Amino acid sequence: MRRLIEYLTAHPKRLYTVVAGAVLLLPVALWLDLNSLSHHNLHRQATSLNKLMNDVRSYYAENVVARVQAAPSAPEARHDYHEIEGAFPIPATAAIELSARFSEILPGVDYHFVSDYPFSGRDQRHMTEFEARALQAFRNPENERDHIIAEEGNLIDHRMTLAAPVYMQASCVSCHNTHPKSTKTDWQVGDVRGLQVVHVRQPLTLDLASFKFLLSYLLIAGTFGLAFAKHQLRLAEKFATANDELTENNSFLADVSLKISKYLEPQVYRSIFEGERDVSISTERKKLTVFFSDIKDFTATTERMQPEELTALLNEYFTEMGAIAQKHGATIDKFIGDAIVAFIGDPTSKGVTEDARACVRMALEMQTRLDELEVQWRAKGIEHPFRARMGINTGYCNVGNFGSDSRMDYTIIGAEANLAARLEGIAEPGGIVMSYETYAHAKDLVNAQALEPQHFKGISREIIPYRVLRHGANRRPATAREEGENLVVEMQGMDAETRAKIAAAVQDALDNT
Image (tube, rainbow, N blue to C red; front, top):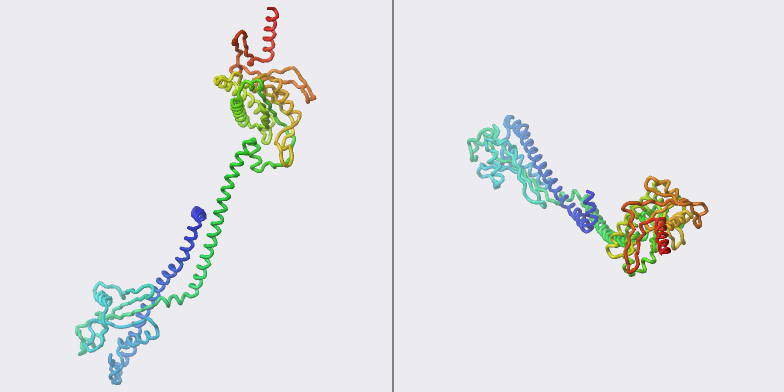
C-alpha cells in the first residue's frame, strides 16, 4: 500500500485517473446492485403470488365449492357461471379472475393458466416456448422441482416468469373425464393438467425512484470528489515543480558544500554541517597536541625547479601528508607556504594521552612516506627531494573561531602552539623533535634521545627536547659523487652531531694540506 501511495504521489495524473475512475464506477456498482435487488424482488413477488394463488384456490375449493355442492339443491360450479343464473365459478376460474384484479392493483404482474388440453370452445392463450418446456419438464417422472423460473429483459426492463404445475385432484378428474368439451378423458389423479404462470415485470425506473436520496448523494459526492481530485492534481503539479526546484537547489548546495569541504578539515566540516558547532566567534581552552612541519631548504630547492614542476611536487607532498593526517584524526590548521600546522584534540578528542600518541604515530608515518617518496622523486629526476622537519608539543591552547563577524578562521593560538614551531626549528631534515609531555605519553612508541635543555623565544620555562632516533630503512645513508674537481657528499641522512664531526675532520685535513 505504501508503494502504491508513493507511486501515485509521484504520478499525480494517474492519481487523478484513479479517482475519476472510482467516481465513475460508483454508478456502475449502483447499477449492478439495482439489478441484483430487482432479481431478488421479482423472485420474491413471483413465488409469493404463486403461493398465494395456490392457497386461495385450495381454500376456495375446500371451504366454498365443496360446502356449497354438499347442500341440497346446490347451484352448479361452472367456468361459464356468468352465462348461467345461480351458478358460481370453479376454483380455477375464481383464481384467474382474482389474479386479474391483482394485476390491476399491482402494475407489472400477470397471472394466468395455460394447458395443452383446453376445453373446446374456450379462448386459449398461446403457449410460449418457455411454458412448453416447463410443462414437459413437470410431466417427466424424474422431476422434483415445484416451479421453474425464467428471466429475460435487461437492466432497463427486468422481467421474470414463474411456472408451477397444476395437478389433477379427484374432483377434477371426474369432471374432466366426463365433460363433453374435454379434449382428454383419461386423466388420473396427480397428472399435470397445465401450468399456473406468474409473470412479473419491474422497470428500472421503479428501482431508481427508491434510491433517489442515495443517487442524489452519489451525484453530489462524485462532483465534490472530482473537484477535489482536480484540486489535488494542481497541488501535486505545484509540489512536483517545487520538488524539482528543491532537488536542483539541493544538488547545487551539495556541489557547493563539496567545494567548501576542500577548504575545511573533515572534522570541522562535519561539525558545522551537522549542527554541532555554531559559526560564531568563540574559543575555548583545551589541552591539545600540536604538530608543526616544514621543508628543509625549501627556498634553495625551489630555485632549481620550474614553477609548474614545483607546484605539482608541492601538491603531491601536501596530498600525501594530508591523507596521513586525516587517517590519524588530526585537524590541519593551515598550510603556510611549505609548512603544515595541525593539531589533535579538537573538535573531537580521544583523551590527552591517545591524542598525543596519535600525533606521534602520524609524524612517524609521514617521515616513512617521505622516505618512499624520495626514492620516487629521485627516479623522476628531482635532484633535491623534499626533506621535512617536524615538531610536536602537548599543552593548553585556545582553539576556536577567530576573526570578525564577516570573516573568521578556525585555528589555535598560545605559547604551547609556538613551542611546537620552535621544536620543529631545531629538528634535523627527516627528524622529529617533541616536548617532554608528548614524549611521556608516547615513549613506548619511539626510541628518543633527550637533548640539552633550551630556552625558546616566547617560552619562559626551560624545555628539554626529545629527538626521535630513526634507524634502518628510514635513514638514508650518506652518499658521495664527483662534480668536476669537487667531491659532493650528501649527509642529509646523518644527525647534526655526526655531520659536525665529519665537517671538522675535513676542515682539519684541508688546513694540514
